[in-house]
Length: 367
Image (cartoon, one colour):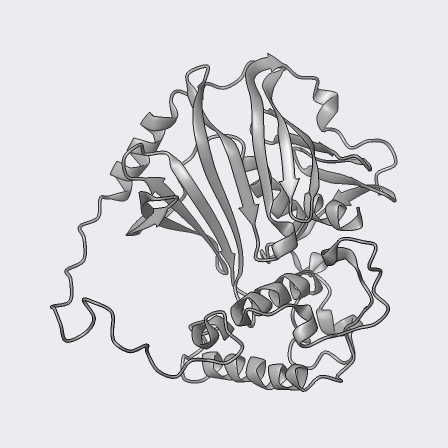
C-alpha cells in the first residue's frame, strides 16, 4: 500500500526551478556513498534510476544488493534493498559509465544534453557496435534519402484541436465535472477512482482500493495529499507536477507559448502531428495531435537532469461526446517504472453538475 500511496501522490518531481529558499535537498546530502550523482535532487534519484534500468533492459538487482526481502508482498514492494553496498561489479562499472556520459555532454557537446545511457545501450546491457546484416530494405545505398514530409503550421494544428474538442464554456459557480471509473496498476493492484474538477485550479482525485482510500487535491495555490501519516501539504516541484496531473482531465484551454510542429509520428496505429513547447529552461512539453480527428492522443513532459531526462507520458483514448465536448474515457500514464503504469478507464463523466467547494480544501491536520 505504501507504493500505491507514493504513486497516487507524486511518482517523480518535475525538476522545475524553484525559489532559492525552496531548493530541493540533494541526493548526496543523505547518501555519502553516492559518488557521481551527489548534486542530483533527491526527488529525481529513483525516477532516474528507473530510466537507467530501462535503458539497459535490467532491473534494480542488476547493480544493487537485496537482503531479506519480504516475499509475501508484490514484486515491486518486497524491499530489503541495501542501496549503498558496492558488492557487484556492475554497480562499479555503472559509475564509470555515468561519469562518461556527463563528461561527454559537458565536453564535446559543449553542455548540451545530447547523449544518455540509452543512446548506446538501446535496451540491452551491452551496446551493439554494428548494424544488423543484411541491411533492411530501403537502407543506405539502395534508394535516395526520402524528402521530409510537409508539416502544417502550429496555427492549423491548434485550430483543428480546438474545433475537434468542441465548445468548452466556463462552468457556472458551484458546478464542475465529476469523473468516475477504475484505476488499474501492475501486480494486480486496482481500485475505484473519482476525480472532481472545478474552475481552472481546483482538483481532487480519490482512489479506493480493497485496503484503503487515499486522496490528493488542489485548491488554488494549495496542494495536498492524504497519507497513512495524515495530510501532507505539497510545495515546489511536487505542487507543479500536481497541477500538470489535474490538467489531464480537462481540454487544454490555452495554446502553449511557442508551440511548434516538429514532425509526424504514430500513436496507437494513428498518424499524429508532433508539436513541442518549452515550459521552462529544462522542461519540454510534447503534444501528439491526431492527423484525422485533431484530438490529443498523447502528451510527454521531459525534464532534463544531469544524466538522463525524466519523462512522463500520458496517452488518451476512447474519446466520447459529453454535453458537446469530446473527452477521453481512457487515460494511461507512465514514467518509466514498470510498477507505476496507471490505466484509468472511466465509466461516467458528468459535466456542469453541482460541486461542493469544500471537497478541494485539505482535510484538517495538514502539515
